[in-house]
Image 1: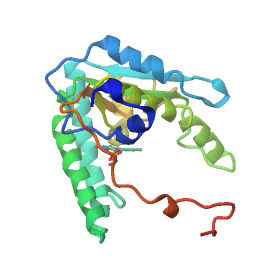
Image 2: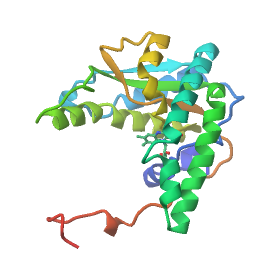
Image 3: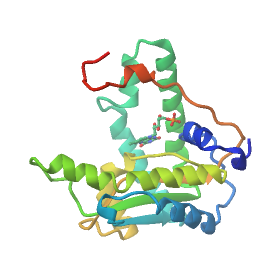
Image 4: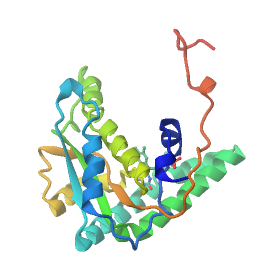
Length: 226
Ligand SMILES: Cc1cc2nc3c(=O)[nH]c(=O)nc-3n(C[C@H](O)[C@H](O)[C@H](O)COP(=O)(O)O)c2cc1C
């Protein structure tokens, strides 16, 4: 299916985390990246603040240094409780276990090849809330992240519809400050929320993935309703 055949439902249900199918050899014109970001800028923000910045990383040396940070972070994540490795070990349902193992294999591939991915996008939100606690904290965290995550997902959808593969990643944030220093991001003023490797994808088809049933995740009128 060509990108232009993607109707909205198809686009939403087949925008996968692309790692093994990233074309590491074919350059990505910066104009296409800007086009995807222009679309992302139509996403909603709390109070219409639009206080976002998007760091685009194309320089080979910077990508190598970011990949080094990512790898070190991934080594920490690998042993962490709640990681995909941990989930895969504990999962008893065969299909889910297999899915976890596929994600691990794909994620390991990205760990090895991140520096070869031609473009990374690091969406940043204004301010730092990481130390915030108290009764307003959740409202503020939600408004902050909710004002950058929709735009980032829009970027990924716009990329997919143009033939570009992406994957949401957060591992490098364990070393966010080091990444900020590397890229000149003012750490005390902007919070990085993800790193989105971006490259043309290989092959044509993407499928909807195994997910929970709607009945298992909805509650109507009362949490305890069935
Ligand atoms: C908040 C968040 C953080 C993620 N962090 C990483 C990451 O650091 N590295 C990685 O390879 N994938 C990461 N992923 C991608 C998930 O593994 C992926 O979305 C999930 O396995 C579902 O894959 P699918 O969309 O292809 O079905 C992250 C996804 C989200 C939403």
